[in-house]
Figure 1 (cartoon, protein in one colour):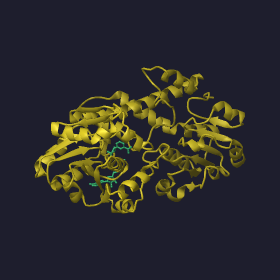
Figure 2 (spheres, protein in one colour):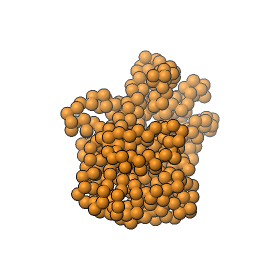
Figure 3 (cartoon, rainbow, N blue to C red):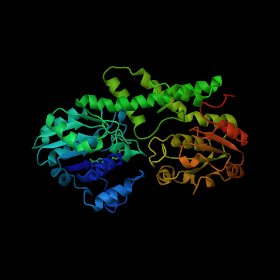
Figure 4 (cartoon, rainbow, N blue to C red):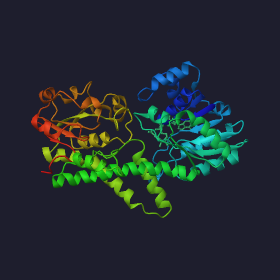
Length: 435
Ligand code: NAD
């Protein structure tokens, strides 16, 4: 099938590449000419495990192309995916400017019956708006379907190729048939394609992300209480998650959720609630807890050291989670800004996100070539992202490099008892007595 993907970011690039890998003829277009030039050379501008190899192979075999000419790509496509960004706009609602602009351009470019599938996360009712644009501008019949994406950065290829489910909001049988055919290779292990109305499909995406964010904030509230009452949040997590009605995923306490989706999607859902006069009190609390949590370790550090001015902190991890270089809404930003704001110096290390962090912080942060270099002469270490390479470090080497053996662990990667035995002052989330 001939496919066009509009927007070659995390979602568009993964979608286009996986669809090419299953034998389709895919053109990805983006307005960012620099990004497209790099992709044409086989350079993937984001870090996503396995992606570069798959991009190159499909490019070489002629199934995957990159360009800036939307009209050309759309004119030959049977299905056009919209995968442009929907950042946080005014009053928290999703900013639809890119989606609407892309839709207008797509409408002018279609040359025969086309399915336009929205992969971007968009507020309920957006498919209807795009269908209206098609009705006004397109010279051929267009079916607009909502096809939200559930991939996780860091495991995006696996998630796309073996999804838990595919959600398709479509109003026409013809569009449903085409989408079923397109996704058939990815749902062969009895994973469902759930067909529904576009409005419900759009809501599924927000409800799913809001639920995951809720689990995280809930566990962070419980962890705070654990600290106060002397319970161990890790043991509580294991006991609670063992209940099959609850399950283990997304119950790890930490320094809050971040990334390009949860924060903005929770805000956008709250905005939808406000627009329709529905008070989503629970979600407001989820957000509030997350804000508090991002500052949790910083207040621990203030309590431990008093004044932070002139102190030096090593920071391990900058990306919002492991296996990605994405720093959008990363808790590391809050932690580092907090430290700098209190007059401290920061020496940071991340296996893949340093380039992006450099653009964010410039000269204000020292970037270390490795995790141990980040500790040289530091008063303490902050663990912010749970990269697996941080899990079993050389504790003796750490102690030799740090001015004092103090660790603030925002992801509970170490065992408190072992840390104590090793002679560290160790602060994590929900596992140490409040003091
Ligand atoms: P991104 O910022 O990485 O990529 C968006 C791309 O769209 C950019 O390269 C930008 O240059 C391009 N673009 C903007 N306007 C354009 C236009 N008019 N024509 C062509 N290209 C245009 O964003 P992303 O992380 O891939 O997210 C895209 C959408 O998918 C968002 O709505 C997001 O909420 C949703 N989503 C993201 C993830 C994720 O993990 N990143 C997961 C599920 C859903």
